[in-house]
Amino acid sequence: MNYADARQKIKSGDVLLWRCTGLVPWLIRKITKSQWAHVGIAIWWGDRLMVVDSYPVKGTRARPLGRCIDTATWLPMPPLEGRWTAEASSFALEELGRGYSYQNLFKTWMGLNLARSGYHCAQYAGGILERCGLKLSWPPTPESIYAELRGFLNAEALTGGGDA
Image (cartoon, rainbow, N blue to C red; front, side):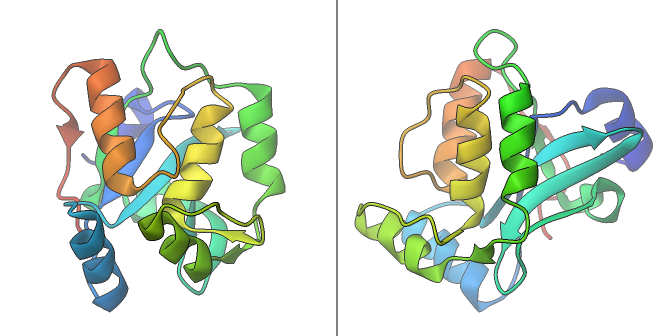
């Protein structure tokens, strides 16, 4: 999807997924048996279309979607189950700047309780989506978010390349 199309279609709360390259993304895909290694949430701030995510080393961040949309796969928020809320917006903003949590990534793979010291990408995205009223399985992975949203939507994803 190009950025001009994205600006017309994407709404706050929509999910963006990437395949990504490198050792950590490869491990994430391998251990979670997923095609996806990374997930973020679209958010409109005024007239800027951004994506919020948690990325290794960088932690939770916001970046212009125009810099990464060409490699993303887009899933719209389900219209009946989810609504963008002030609570979701506040959570997304308040949690910016937290560190990336490799510990929580490992705990997700092991099915253990997650700490609030930082987030992996699906944990941050899942926290935002929960505040939109979506009930997702916990702890989330990029693949589980993709599969559950596809189930809600019961439709094909509108895709780009998916390689960040």
